[in-house]
Each structure stands twice: as structure tokens, then as C-alpha cells.
Length: 365
Image (cartoon, rainbow, N blue to C red; front, top):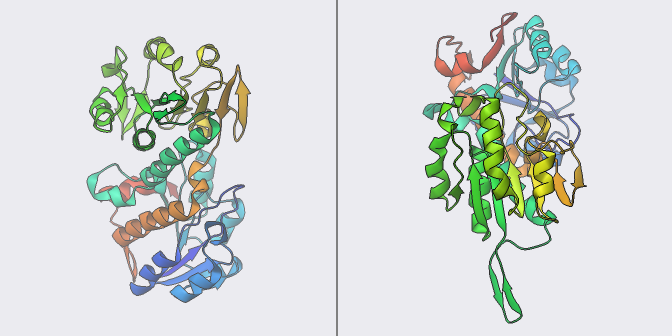
């Protein structure tokens, strides 16, 4: 089959859906690879590197003859127009929050596999782009927080006196939260974490962190590893419990998301006022509305003496690693879904059924 890769056009996006190394793997399987000129430059992959790997560097118009189209972000209107009916698109889609876009893709007759819809099952772990990107984001969030702080993380004993370790508080113990815990701990901080899922306590403690328990957490409903429904009563009790811990923290990192809905507000203005002067919040959920009510999208602001970092698309700050992992996620998915001769279309198979959002003019989810 012929596989085409778009150059990303979203502002500040530095990732690409295919790296030269993974392009070689497709070619060895018998596929032909086309990549839009300049697609990998922001990830530090030159056009020459793709050519040496065996791919053909092409104009956007030349991509139209492909069978499968790869992207990181949701397709723009001109990209949808370029993809012929009956062909395959693989990208992030978030269909529940982008219904009109999904309907437009379906109406064009494009079969779209959504990388944000990979089932959370063991045999799909190597395809799970949300996890691979969140892992990097959790690491980077700690580094960003450390850079924004006015003090170091570890205990330091000097002739001039002892420097006490920083205290880091992390909301949400998913993939990003766990990596943030591990990174902050390696840097020498005292780490605390909280999550609506009490079963994450053991994971936090295994990484050397302290788990903050909130009464009533066992009543929270989850789905696919994410919180599905969180009551107002639970959020109130969580805020009361967290208030004393957040007032001692030097760095707070929030990662809490609710599937298909706006991110829950976990840090109120009242809680920010209670924080130490000069402390830092990194709100990793800012693109979905933010876990801190004072966060501003793609801005770093100071409110009540607290620096609040609202950086969206954190994986794009690590484009080499993020592109490499994402490209491998797609490669593993396509190896499962297709051969060099075409798509398998095993509609009842769990991974196919989970990721296929549009097919034969219909919206499937």
C-alpha cells in the first residue's frame, strides 16, 4: 500500500506522524511511503533523512494518490478535501468533542482510525499513543515546574546551612502523573499525590510518593483508566483535604481529565491564595479547560504570588521523542490492521472496533 504523511499545520505543533526509522520499517514490509516536504523539520528530521530511508518527499498535492494518510492532529478542511473517498486516515480525532469534524470525515467516505481511541488492553499497549505522549508530558511538566521555581528540588547540606527539599503535589495518577512522581522523586523532592481512584495508592507508594486519601473515593466511577463521573460532593471533600497539603507545596502539577468532558476544577482561587508566595502550578489539563480556575491557555501568569504555567501540547516540547513514539504507535496499529496488500477490515475485532470511528460514509461512534 501507499502511505502518505501530512506536515502538521497546527500552531506550535512540532511533531510528525512518521520518522525516518519507522519509514524504513514500512518499506521493508512492502509499502511505499510519501511524506510532505518539510514535515519532519520541527522534529529535527530532515527531508534528506527520509529520502535515505527510502521514502519519497512530495508536495501536498502528490499525497492524494495514497491509500493511508497519517497525521498527529485532527485533519483540517483542506486535508479532508485532499483524501479520496474510500481511503484511510489515522490521527487523533477526539470524536466525542469534535462531532462535526467526525461527521465531515464520514460524509467524505474516509475511514478514520482515532489514535485517542486505542483500547486500554494489554495487547494494544504498544499502540497506545495517549500513554506514550502522556509519559513524556509528565516528565516535561516536572522540568518546566523546576525551571519556574526559585529553589532546587533536593536536600542540600552545605557549610552555609541546609537547604530543605522542595515539596511537590501531583493531582491525578495516570500515566502522566506517575511519570511526574518518578521524575520529581529522582530530582530529590518530597512527593505527594492524590487521585479519585483509590487503587492508585499502591502505584504512588511504589515510586516513593505519599498518597493523599480522600473519603468517598471508592464511589467514583471510572472507564478505560479515566474518571468517568465525579460527584460535586466528592470534589468538595477533595478540596478540603487537599487545602492543607497545597499550602505546603512548592510545586503543584495537575493532570486530571474526565473522558469526553471538560477537565474538573481542582484548584480554586481560594486554594491558590493559600499557597506559598513563589510556589508554582503546572496545569497539564489547561487545553481541556484546566484543573486550576486561574490557568490561562498557553500563558504563564502570576496570581496571588503563585506562578501558573498553562502550557498546552506539552509533548510537542519534546518533538524527537514524541514523534518517534507516536510513529511507532501508528506502525504497531497498522501492522495489526493491514498487510502490504490492504486493510484486513476485521470489524468485530476489539482493536479495530475500538479505534474505527468512521467507515463507508457512516459515523460508528
